[in-house]
Length: 208
Image 1 (cartoon, rainbow, N blue to C red):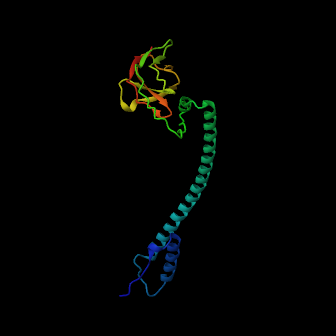
Image 2: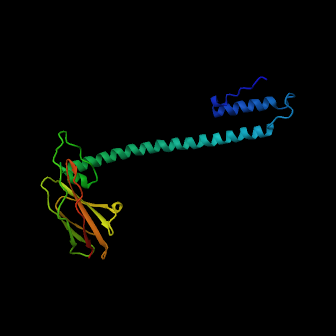
Image 3: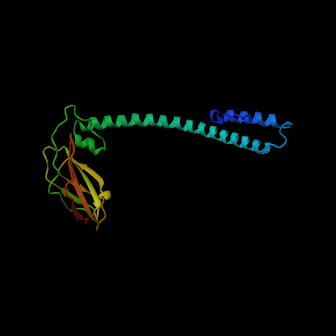
C-alpha cells in the first residue's frame, strides 16, 4: 500500500491552511472519494478555525510589537533620566559615600579598593524622642565609617520584618512618624568604600 506523506511538521500555519483548502477542493465531488472520513465539512470547519485563530494571533502580535516598541522607547527615556539623576547625586555628594548610599544608589568601586573592614556599631541605644511618635538613636562612632544605615523592625523580631529606615552621616539620628505605644527594634550598620559592616545588636524602645 502506498502511503500518503503530509510533512505537516515542515509547514507553516499559512502553508497548512493553503494545502488544506487545496486538498478539500480537490476532494469535493471527486468520484474517487464518496465518503471522506472525516467529512469534508469537518475538514473545512477545522481549516477555518485554524485560519481564524492564526488571524487573531497575528492581530495580537501586531499589538504586542507596537507595545514593545513603546516599552523600549520608555526604557531609553528612563535610562537617560536615571543617568542624569545619578550625575546630580554624584555632584551633590562630592565623594561622600554615605550621601550616595542615602539616595539608594551604589558608589563606584575604587580602582585601588580599601581593605579597611568595618566593625559592627556598638552600644546602640534607642530612647523616646522629644515629640510624640519619635525615637532617638545613638551608637559608638567609627572613624573608618562614612555613614550608617538604620533598619527597623516591629516587635516581635523576625528576620523578614527588618526594613530600611534611613541613612545617617552621624552616629546618632531621630526617627519620626512612628505610632505611639508600639514596641520597635532598631539595628545599625556602618558604611564605607568597602561596603557595609555586620549589623549591630538590636535595641528596642516603646514609641512615646
